[in-house]
Length: 118
Image (cartoon, rainbow, N blue to C red; front, side, top):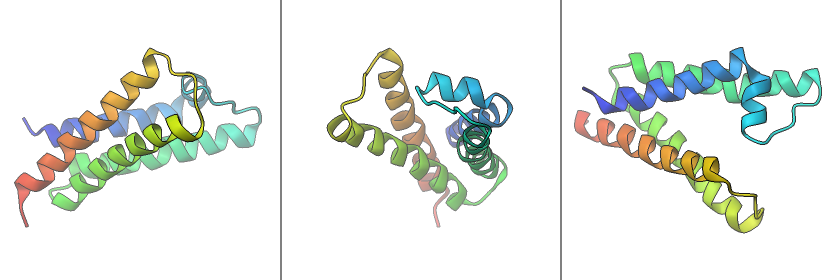
């Protein structure tokens, strides 16, 4: 099994959720989409972007696709760690679960990209 595809599928599915149920995605992330514009931005930014990148990583045979998916997950993880210092967010179990998932899925995608070689 190509674990990079698992990482890509997870990113794609999280994006699809953002497109289909943006209100619930925003709520689960502690975001407030208080206007139709806010819902549209959640749908586009957390939905369409991740769905497209995940789908590319899932269907592509190019290592760059896996690397992009991995960099996206790890970028989210890095920003989440930085937020601990800058924002002092309330950290419940989901915050740490998201961080663990971001690191794990990012590492899987980068490992898959490295295995494909140049």
